[in-house]
Image (cartoon, rainbow, N blue to C red; front, side, top):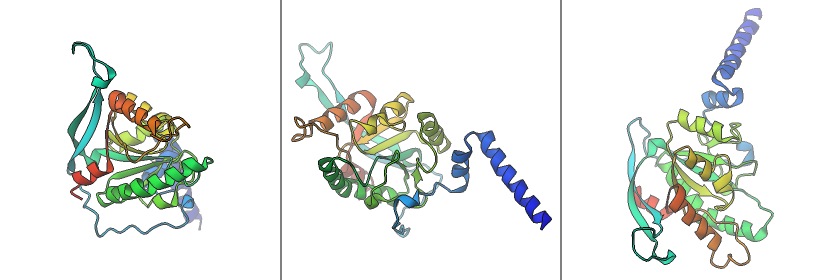
Length: 263
């Protein structure tokens, strides 16, 4: 019995000590031991993932060619121009899946604004659900950033998917460290809202672009918080997409991803 307790103490000291040596006990223990278990209490009914149709995950580069879009405003040296002379630039982008993560921002089950909540639920079912199915089939790294909200049951995390809240990751520096540990340099963003949290959360587009990550917004898998003046045309969302395409990265669509994967 004495030897049993001695072994337990030694094991505890090794785990506890290694956590502090590596920096951030809770986060490091989560990284080493889980591996990245989903925060299951947010989703009481966890779907059982089907492995039969999943693509094999290997150490070799897994590349797809993804159709993307950026925006080039008209500028100096082009003669007389106006804003209407700007243009979209469509490029085929080589994407290494082993270095790419899908970031799902604030895919919440509830929202205090009823109109917003209805639009979000519609977008989740139409875009995020098939997007997740595609990412899971091809063994992409999937990261949820719920920021204290309850994740919508329609997109409930599965075992092996990363939930930043559960990992104790709530700063840009911690998120950057996690991505470096996993060798991630490209971030595919979906979630809500495009003009709020998707941009300025600690794991959001603005901050990660400053750290030189390749940013790709899935532009039809997000909506903005609109105003009475912008709601009919969803103009706030269009403006933010334009900002991302011209300042911080590029965009794609769910259909482009499905095409790239041969779906």
